[in-house]
Image (cartoon, rainbow, N blue to C red; front, side, top):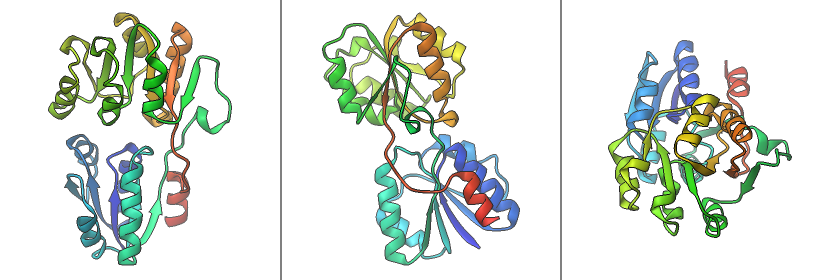
Length: 246
């Protein structure tokens, strides 16, 4: 089967490994060089790097039997485009979603607070003081432009593009933490203390994205964890997809 897989996530790598091992013709589309590095560990797959627009998506799908959407759970715009392209080309589409954590239980510890968007978090922080660790990715950085850049401590993947995004907001270089995660509880705790953090902002990326370690670091330090809630979506987990397909 000719399979087109979108996703530079860990889930995408697991899927491509299993599908290629089965003998499928797998093409993986990743948006960044980081995603390419993840997929480069997999033998027998074709890797395409760079964000794809609607026309490119449709052109690629025309040559494949199945499109698997394993993009990040917060990449809602990409998922919507992939669904539209699949409908337009008549290509079978399957959404593979990440297993998340606290937000799915309906309850959370007192130190964890959920918000509908990054803008909602930023608004809540306008009346506060102290440093803010932003572990949300650079896409949401602009939402915090109304806060003093001296307060912002963004933790981003180490790429020139991400550093430029931080500097565009006037964030001092001494505040930028360029590291590749996920991170252990101890490392999170050390960073919170080293940078004198008063608020920790993140997404719920589930165990794959190191969310339990962030929550534990918040509990150990007493620093509030402000979480951008994940979008509600339907789909299969990696395990469910592989069981159904393999």
